[in-house]
Image (cartoon, rainbow, N blue to C red; front, side, top):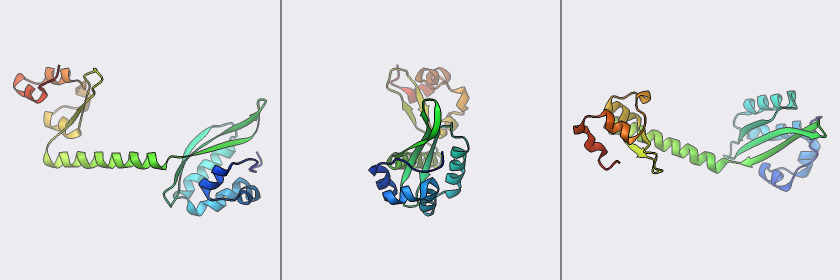
Length: 174
């Protein structure tokens, strides 16, 4: 609770590019000072850190983004001995690859949506789990003049709401 680091491992040092002396010498405040020039959003990290230390009984999960592209998830929780809080525990996980993959997928989805809007074509994805669920692109909703809340998201619902002449779009559904 006095913001000293009493235990760390080699992986922690490697992830943050620190030495054991760096960690032991300055405590938590020294680590923040050492790492602050490397952080993308220092103010958010400082705000989160203040919240963490202002209430030692809270559990916090947040993300640290570094200017060099590293992205770490931080989990911190109270360290209890018998039921008394004696400090805090922190665990860090490298989530950079999964975050970048999710961001790339979202970027491609946005590009596809924009291309469909420009070309006035739509797309749908059918779940192949037997549920008959369909996911429509925004443009497909516009093409069919259906509000998002008005479509139940199944092949049967699509066929039920369209006259027989339009059902060739859904040929092959059961």
